[in-house]
Length: 196
Figure 1: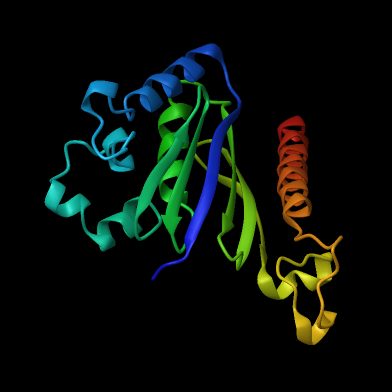
Figure 2 (figure 1 turned 180 degrees about the vertical axis):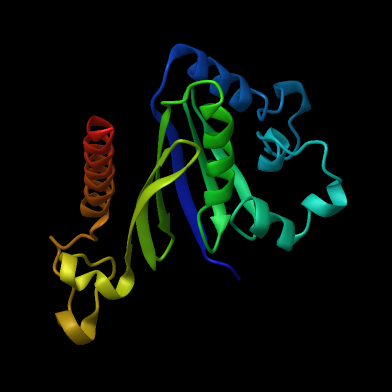
């Protein structure tokens, strides 16, 4: 069974026109309330841009890996300027790049950001999208957690037999690293823009 990877993708900065476009695209993925079956609230992600592609093709693992960036990808939530997804093995990078590519046609300076984490988590990270592509990505894998002072599960062999009552997993620290890495990437982007 594939590990779930949870991701959030949003407009970090953009003009009103691109925000309106993105909201309309997201709204188009919401199933009308009177058509909801079995608590499925959202259409498949491929319907945002690839609704004309044969369903036989879009239902294959290889199509999703090549076009979405993951074995499968489901929408978890949609907000005014953001989308949250659950995907298999990796975050849906190609899907987010496609959004960024199309959005750039409306606002050439639009910036998107994303955070993602594997459910274990075996890895987590952040990405910034600019000029229709991944501008930069920061990822930490599980073998680097101890270097960052992160721990998500009590390891009796390394940490002792009993878990102290005041111990908690490093979820807050992970979120802070994701947020800080986005700000650092944005800072680098601004520096590059100033040079141009």
